[in-house]
Image (cartoon, rainbow, N blue to C red; front, side, top):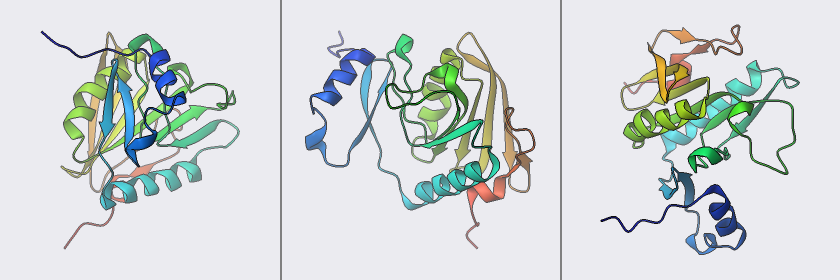
Length: 190
């Protein structure tokens, strides 16, 4: 018998507002399928990759059409979830001061994965597909490749592709914006 308590997004919001997480230092949390999860602190390769993706994203997206967000939350109330993807491309149509972005605001999500690879491939992929996120990329630091998930249907991405070093890919929403896999993964150790 499980004794876990499942929280709604409203419960999670009240916990944040009341300061439940204040005494936890720099510990970050996400709400995933009603469970409050502690997010591993990033290591230098993860942080550097997020920086590279952020600069690339800002360079290739028109500011009047796409808003780039870095490690900010996404509200998926139907699935009791508030994940914090590493990079998110959002439609520019609203001010997020009064609410979190929701799935219909999302154009593309990135997760940078090292210790979180299994979770990002399975649980986050399922969560994002169930939410109808059109495109989800994993920068797989473990295997040194980019994984591209597209065409969500019934909680599963129908299209899963990989790109390796020396290859490139462009997002559906910005077909002229090519990301070189080498750029995303950084310089290889010799």
